[in-house]
Length: 285
Image 1 (cartoon, rainbow, N blue to C red):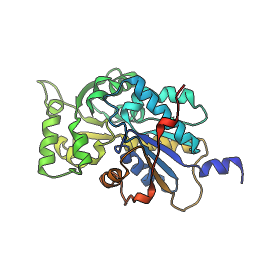
Image 2 (image 1 turned 90 degrees about the horizontal axis):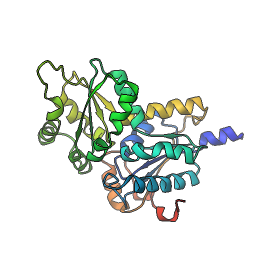
Image 3 (image 1 turned 180 degrees about the vertical axis):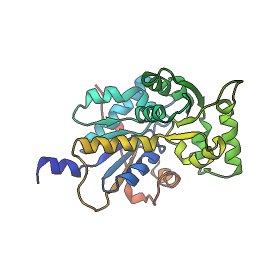
């Protein structure tokens, strides 16, 4: 077997601070069913949104080292907080492994989809405050008008399995009201970026609230498209028709992870699939 054939069989590594990145993993499995996947959730140190950029960078490098040690062919940063600060440094640190974040694909899709140049971004407070999406969108299309809204409550709804129903829609409507209110002469947003990997779990409720005239940009879908494109360009798609294997690594609470995973990942996750790991062993220089 050639070296290239061996590389094709290697897994894709997916890293997140907790469970939200499972929406990205789910989309990867849906669009790339033959690929082997390893998911790492740093559940011992979640949430990252309250940590300094220096700490987030250190955590990200530790996670990347572990996954690269397990011989992944591509690394997906399925966390908006990490994508905002660590994608470029990780690309420089590990030049032999392609690194894909969630912010860049979401920004590109947003710019391509908007018709009137008015877009909304919903994310956690930290992602909104560090303006990751705003900067990425403006770098591509300075003419776009952006409204950003922190919706951290959506994370709790998603993790508790509250994804639909009248109460959920009422909460979503209350949180999105500042984005949807139109000033005089304002046509309103026509595109909404789901800037947190938890939020696709609430896509149905969000779509009902914003209505059919507003397109939703799902970072899980857009990121997977970029991954697929990079694999094709590098000739790294796994060959054959057999479904790929999925394994899970967590840094704490494997029992809770198994329970919450069912809200984000299609298909059962068993305790036997979840391995407890310690990122503290990976010292960052």
